[in-house]
Length: 279
Image (tube, rainbow, N blue to C red; front, top):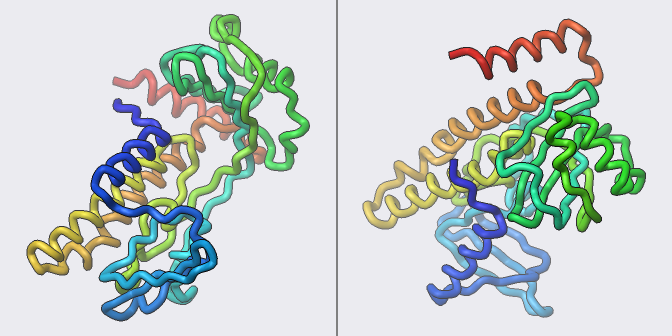
């Protein structure tokens, strides 16, 4: 396993872009995409009160779930698939040493929990909570007590607590928009798909999309072939749906669902036992 933190990825990409002498526009307002069905799509934006227009060969829509890229496509051309989960993750970031250098995933009668490290001195912890909870209801003391109640006694005893430096509740959902290409506009990353964080596949999928798209563009310019561009959506979605399946499966295995009965809980336990112990 290779762990490459998202903040480190961003820093390295920005440094590489700067060294290459390429321009990045920050704080652009009123971004819009035009003429994606033609040969010269355009991106318009306002910066410091001045309207700018970039004439492109292609547009890569890497602007996230709430960005303008997917919204620039007629609704009739997009099919969306979504699963919203009936709980959230209450997350706390603290300047405390991690309780373990390995990830800890917890399936507990009180709900899911996760312990992860950000550095040798910073930790990230999560507990499953109802979506109706208000983060203001969760004091640091309440959070640490709840986390400890879901950990095994040895780990709970080793847990170092401290003031939270960030606390939030994140909803969980699975989402896919198909296709991922519309004329000369390509969607990549969260603009096209969302996975619940359980499987930690979001950044991996974004990198995979960019791999397929960059290879297709090199093929287009270097070999004068449209094969990679034409196959981009199908190639990317094949991996997207595999990651969606994995993340959905892992979410169903580790969380407590409000409508689960005794049979469902026993099946979940049996599945986890089979996963851990079957050779």
